Length: 425
Image (cartoon, rainbow, N blue to C red; front, side, top):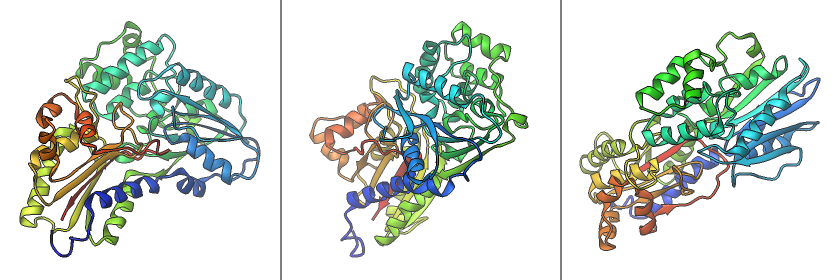
């Protein structure tokens, strides 16, 4: 370390940046400025996602008038509300609680008038939490396809394309059911590019993709199709609501929190500590382990040659990588990225890193991510761990857990996708 950086605690600074990213997307701060004006008729609040309960709580705290509603969130992510009912369900594989909640949400918005307003609170995770299949498709079919897609390395946009065409509530169908009421959607984005179609599979926005697109995704990744699913897609029965549909004429959607804003909040923390931040992108995708190798190459060039940036600096990025699970481990795209990064860095003395999911859940595990230090591989081998074997087995969670380097936040009540910070001193 140089005299300029000798006073920096790398682990503490990385965690401060991660916490700032999460704080920037808290519903209590980002929802109230976007509430609609009071309608002549009723205000019905519905929604789904890991942040939806906290969003509902923010609405209740700032809405001076009558309202009612129901939102569904991930188990453990509920918060107290008095006028909006909170239902908890399973994520990422849907369950019967989410199925029942989705059906009730549709019931709540039927039969409204043009004087009524439906406030939709949508955040990441909403797809799995509202698993209302089309007629002929069973919940078990959707569960099986969800499990297969999650293990296949398919991108989130492809997963959501499939979900939209097997759902009775996604792909604009929720907004269509609200017609002729006004529909105001507040969105917390967890997807690369912030496309409203992909946030919870777009229940309140038009969808330009087709059943043929969804079928192509499943065939390309060799996902086994139940007969009912194949019939829905091949017949076109699963077609979503398209742009220009008059039932969506009074529907609007506003992004209230995004990955980019979260990265900017982390960058501000770095500047205050005397570290120059560089945001490399908020929508980076691809296999997590391959991204780890690529980012290691950049970090080494910075550390060893001060190119293209001079230390001290931090390389920030977001997006949603994928993990193709082939081993016995449970995956986790942030920890897999980090372990691959560490192997490629090979103990580079100037580089520290943190990678975590802003919702507090990396893959199927209630652990946000982990931290990496120059001595991580050395400590691991002293404990008898084999880093490459852990990566090959998709068991990066087990690797970092054994070292005590896991990052555990508990439910963050928001979700603006993955956060990656590589600190070079």
